[in-house]
Length: 197
Ligand SMILES: *[C@@H]1O[C@H](CO)[C@@H](O)[C@H](O)[C@H]1NC(C)=O
Ligand SMILES: *[C@@H]1O[C@H](CO)[C@@H](O)[C@H](O)[C@H]1NC(C)=O
Image (tube, rainbow, N blue to C red; front, side, top):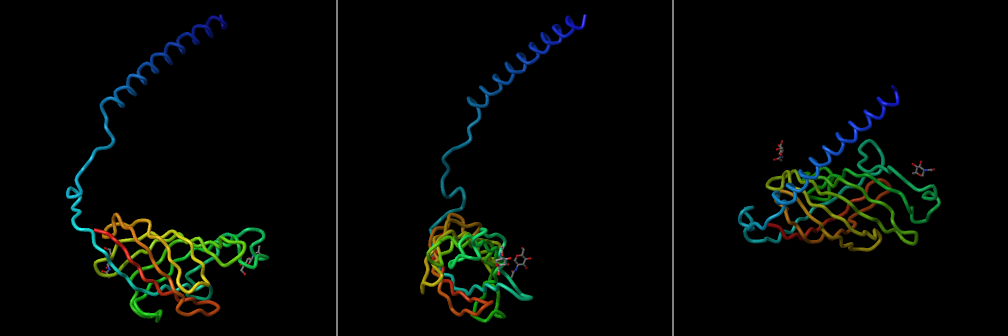
């Protein structure tokens, strides 16, 4: 009896599965034949007119300790503290961007993201950050920077890989220059050159 019941259950189960897989495949076919997921549109339909070139200038404050610290080491390799180049150290930042070198001058935004010591032979950082602007027409817009930063070079250039709101379709580059440097507080001057609409 139990064996018969089991057999019966198996048959019912088999038909149920087949029925649903027929349904599922029919469903898939209609997905592919009727639903498009891409189309061409005109730039004007997004309100895009003439591409503009902007130059932004500000100072970034990277403060690694103390009450007003803005940069925190969040990860490292077992060998990082024995490495002359701090290879593997990864630092998360929320650095203010100010209009003048003085940290108490007007804040135009923040650099939020991370940098990591990426070379075993020199001080060379992988930078992955967003400039999150909070001032005037740029309030709420962001620029994303991904690049290599050889911190001991006088001028370091990094690509802008994109942006949001005012900076949609952004492309361009930034130039970073160390303005001053103490044990805890580094001030970096940024010149940003960006194409956007
Ligand atoms: C390495 O050095 C940093 C900074 O001095 C310290 O915070 C961290 O705890 C050290 N890590 C190890 C594994 O000793
Ligand atoms: C920026 O936008 C936010 C959110 O809309 C608003 O609360 C803030 O006051 C704005 N800041 C400036 C300086 O306009």
